[in-house]
Length: 169
Ligand SMILES: [Zn+2]
Image 1 (cartoon, rainbow, N blue to C red):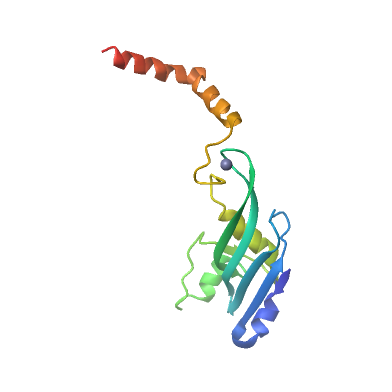
Image 2 (cartoon, rainbow, N blue to C red):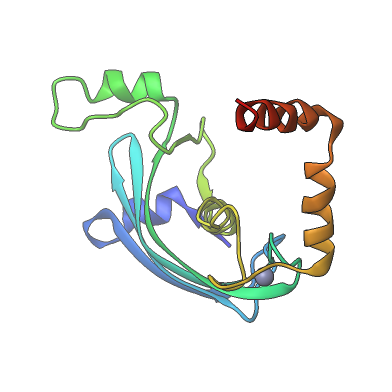
């Protein structure tokens, strides 16, 4: 779904509200992603605010089981119609303050905002790392084996020796 910059500018109060309910390309979800987004045009930039709710299909980092996690994102994104540099110049002396690297996307003349991409980026950035199916998840036998293997890593032998020396003091 693309939102045209002209449609935002031509809307009442230069503000366009959309309700999104669909699946998003490359985002594995259980059912549709639901989003309510408000696109507001301010001269040389577009501000997007709103909320996204997605039931994302994830793999537990401890037990490797599939699980579904509800991800809720409060959206606050800025799209600059040209470049950050030109927007700063256009708004110099006004109240707007643009910080470098503050989730600002440069549209570089692109005349629309890709809503699917916005949702994909917002949701994936909010997936916790590590993702765990349950706070009490103890992992799988496979994972335990993996952890044991790590302890017998020859590179860690040096720490074992250190410990023995300390005890022998
Ligand atoms: Zn788990």
